[in-house]
Every structure is written in structure tokens, then in C-alpha cells.
Length: 193
Image (tube, rainbow, N blue to C red; front, side, top):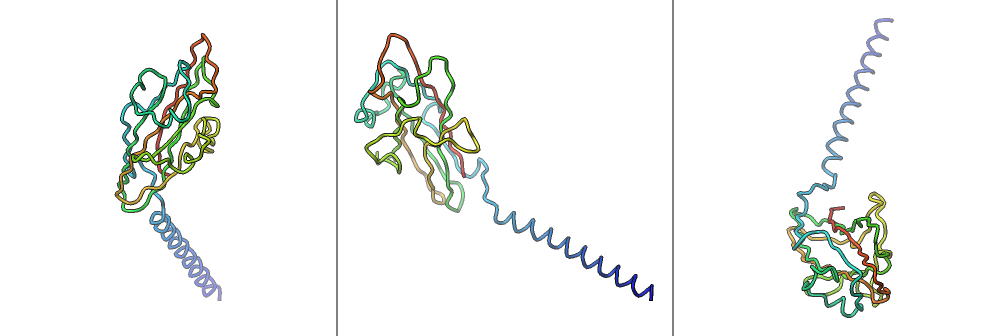
């Protein structure tokens, strides 16, 4: 009788171990096949110049003029202009985020005076930028996983598609100019989500 119970216990333990191993292997295959990849190979991002933009307090401009910035004079710091090319290298649609990382300065312009306008290459404003009120740095939401960064835009790009976006930024005409020089410095980043 004792031999029979021992054999049943060994059989039960063997079955439990086999089921445990099979469930472990199955879960690894399942999660690997359903995992969304966020590697840098998912999308290719190119900036026309440096991803760093500096806006100075020299010349505030209106929203109407800011929307028409063409990239000439960006070296003066009066305006920011950047062309961003995003290419999806995958065979599926990918969600991406464009975000801004402000560089802290001692003589910094407050964020509520820095305006942002994002369009496609045909100069059509993207969602969130089509309204009359142009968003400022302070209007942009903070990213939960990157608390020092603010979300500029969240979009999607279809498989093997290429998008060209244009980012314009400027100092609002509500800023009061003084004799002191101030600036606002930020970097632009793109990541898959």
C-alpha cells in the first residue's frame, strides 16, 4: 500500500512539474509574439539641422507671422524652425510621440511666452495646432515617464510610410521686451510608443 501511494505521489508531482514547465514556455512564446517593439529600428528620424533650438528675447512676433516662419533667420534666435522626417521601418502602423526637453537656463524666458506650431509638409496644422489659440510651452502636458519633458504631439505612421513635419516656434508678442537678454532653449525628440 505504501508503495502504491509513493507511486501516485511521484506521478502527481511529475504531472505538476510538466504542467508548470509547459505553462512557462507557453507564456514566454505568447508574450514575445505580442510584445510591441520600441527599439530605435522601428522608426528612423532625421532633423534638418540640430535638434536643439534657442529662442531669444530680441523680437516677439505675432501668431500670424509665426505660422509663416520659413526657416530663414533661425540662426539669429528670433524664431525656431525645424523639419522632422519620420520613416516607419516596420510592416505595421506605429504610434510615436514628439516631445520637448527644456534646457534650464538662469536667464530663461517663461514658458507661457514660447509658442509652438506643428504642420505637415503641405503646411496643414496637425491635431492640436489647428485652433486659433496657438499652444505655448506651458500648455504642453508633462510626460509621466519623463517628468522633465513635455509632449508636443502624438501621432501614428503607417507601415513603410514616411512623414515630413515642420515645427515652428517663436516668442509671443505679449512678451514685454527689456534691456536684459533672455532666452529659451530646448531639444526635440521622437520616440515610438
